[in-house]
Image (cartoon, rainbow, N blue to C red):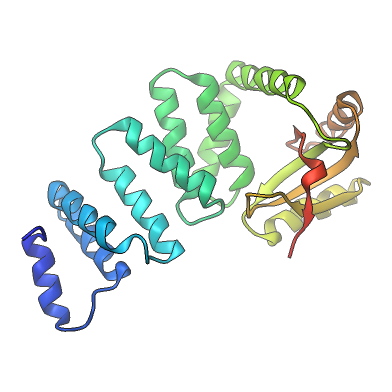
Length: 244
């Protein structure tokens, strides 16, 4: 049998009732808490083979998080963390995945990569328990942040931009409540703010301005930043849509 003894005990306990993906993942969690990592890996593989296709969105996120934590290959772990960030923005494991990616980048001395992940964590997930750590790291590493800014400007200059595609972004949030707080603050400073989404992401973005050229957008960005806001220049304003 491919199933583990502990998993068989679990199956026996529930009797003839079909084991759900959530219950199977709970058994993996129990194995991890007991320090039985090898058995947890095998049980997770069993779950992946049999229950991943029909699992709920939340269980898929949990499965990715567990697989990343249990794998012995850092490169494979990074791929699962990236999937959590890109495919499930705002999910219950996305901020933790960003934190792990930042730690991995710092360990391999990729300061710019660490800055990118820490900044995304601090800006997009301000309620995360890791947000304060991310903000502190960014404050201690101004050179890495400056290198990140330079790389972003270079990428923007090289990328084709649709007409009216430039805008100043004050943050991207997993829910409208956090976005609304930042928008209200910016409006109190006299800025005309909008809350939008872009294709391929569920995050709510707070933005100001829409420009044909980069120079005008950068000028606004400097003014907004002078008001104490964390800002970024984006190039996909032409693809924006209203939040539901």
